[in-house]
Length: 387
Figure 1 (spheres, helix red, strand yellow):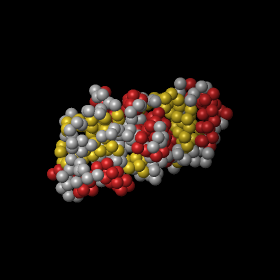
Figure 2 (spheres, rainbow, N blue to C red; figure 1 turned 60 degrees about the vertical axis):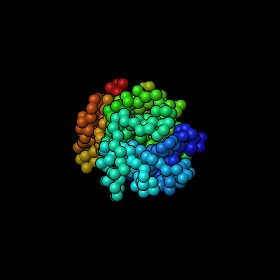
Figure 3 (cartoon, one colour; figure 1 turned 90 degrees about the vertical axis):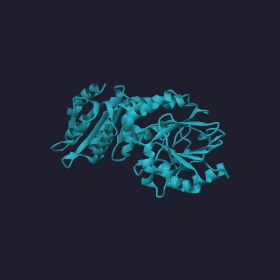
Figure 4 (cartoon, helix red, strand yellow; figure 1 turned 120 degrees about the vertical axis):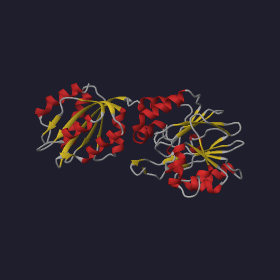
């Protein structure tokens, strides 16, 4: 399937976004094999452009726009999200079409002068919940979605073709040209970009339930048509902070390899006990990947060393990230390693106790430098406690 097939909406709603296969780090922190910056044009008596694109996609965006519009001029730019990966070209587009009006929420109007010089506010139309805008045969209905994942965000429902322009919701990492299935990068995207705001996502999903949706057109990734029920079901699970799958995710951070050796041996014991187990070395993998796995599975074990009387930084980083992403509703086991004055378990427990509805399994295992045969009973007890 080529790129345009993956983002095809209809004969009157055209994709004009930019696909960027060269991006390796999104928002300066999340590893990705490219990204798409989606923008769409609705062709009607009055023409509407749905968002712009990142600075990196400027040329591609304006080339696509020219190919679709020719000599026609848009009447409206619908601004669903002011984050620069979607709003960077608002100023240029406004300069190109000075009579074009800008449409967004009140918060969007307040943000425009923060990002752009010149008087854009005189061209700005503020819309609120369920306001509509007729383009001719197409009617746009505006659906504020604050904190999914910025305060100014709104989605837009096109009533005649039943298209939900969903802003960052239902998006995914990865360039369109990679032709990945939506699920491949979507959970990594969701838990790291949107996941903190589960209650707000639930509110948007509740609004979406009242709509007859034939197409979902997000700001990143492919358009959804045949898989709408599946993607909404995933978002319902994820936004409720409920596990996507049953199993134990073991995140470990080892300095010299002894903690790693103990964890991998224990992982095999858990598998022998019938558990699905996924392990991740926090000194090798990006923390965002560990955040994703922690949210996907119903249970987690964290294993780390004491370092300078504190928690080894790779594990500290993971638990910090989970805390600010609202990690909750899980059972967690703890394994620490320390050659003297071990503190890792105490520090890990402090993080977990600050999170909502976390059950810490007992016993917490404390290794002294390496795993010994005398530790076997504690590991067996932890296996039982993790069931």
